[in-house]
Image (cartoon, protein in one colour):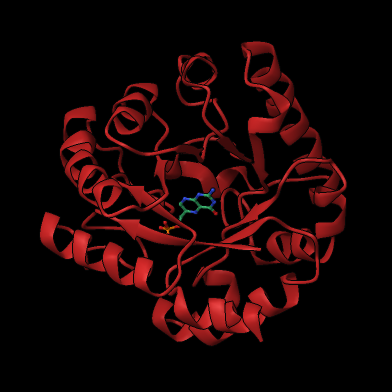
Length: 251
Ligand code: PMM
């Protein structure tokens, strides 16, 4: 199972916002994660925490592109965490190798064709709308069935746009338009997501449903969850701290 290390070059991400918000701090943290054995570094320049405002394309590019270039030079396998096709394209041209789109192609109509044209792996996350008001969209009949059917719609759209099956990775979008109960139901039914036949990524790291007031206090629960998921058949976990997760997976 792969470990994707999170590198948010933002002032406002919920767990690591403001910690690597300039070029030097971001590159240092990326190199640290590489040394700890991160398989992929996921670089993002736009916070998606509930209630967050969008950033402009210019600001997003200014945050991520220099960091992508520098860490690609250092040999990192990089995913670009963006909802914008233009940012995805610029990041791939700067040395990133994977597109991580939390909107599954819904936020930008150019994203799926751009990913198809670039021919790189594409992570399609389950999403119901921008962060500003996503909590009001956390309404489901049967959350597992509904999320699976909405992911299947995005998979069809991706395939129709020309992304090939072998390039698609899916993600149920833990914490995105989902309350704690929804998140746990998805995790308890993770086999159903794995059964869809695509690699599955889980990004639960330090999210609110794990309990505790402070994101840093949720690390122990995040590690427990990685341990639990290690036998589930998922492809990878997206986490803030790399080393303890690699240790759990290697033990
Ligand atoms: N969560 C966040 C951002 N990007 N990408 C994927 N594929 N899956 C996630 O669950 C996900 C994501 C929000 O968390 P952060 O602020 O810690 O980056």
